[in-house]
Image (cartoon, rainbow, N blue to C red):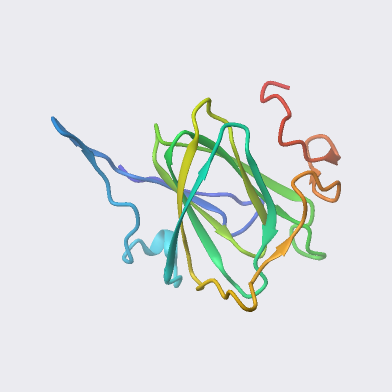
Length: 170
C-alpha cells in the first residue's frame, strides 16, 4: 500500500512509498504516475536524470530559483536526502533529513526553493533517478550553489553548521 508522508517543517517536502509487485522473476513497481495528485499536485515532470555516487559522496548544496521541483528515487544503495530553508519570514532554519533506500522504494519530493543535497550512506554506490518539473537550461542554469560544508546551513538539533558526517546515533 502506498503511503504519503508530508514534512510539516518544510511545506511541500513529501515522501511517497511505492508498491512492489513481486513474482518469481523479481518485482515490478510504478515509479511515478501523473494521476498521483496527492504527491504531484499540479507539477508536471519534464525531465528525468540519473546520478551514480560512490559511498560517502556528498552532493550538496543547491537550490532552484525558478520554481523547479525535484523528485528523487533511490534505485540502488541508500542515501541521506536533506532540504534546508534559509528564507526570511518563512520556515527559516528548518531542516529535513530523509533516509531513502532501494530496500524500501519511495519517491522524495523536494521543492527547489529549499537548499538540498544528498549523501550516499550505504557501503555500495548509490544509483538515483530524479525527475524535475523544469528542463535544464544549459545557457542559463536554474541553480544557486553552496559548498557541501557551508557554515550557513545550520542543523536545528545542534545550532551548529550541518555536518553530513555526523554519526546517526548522536
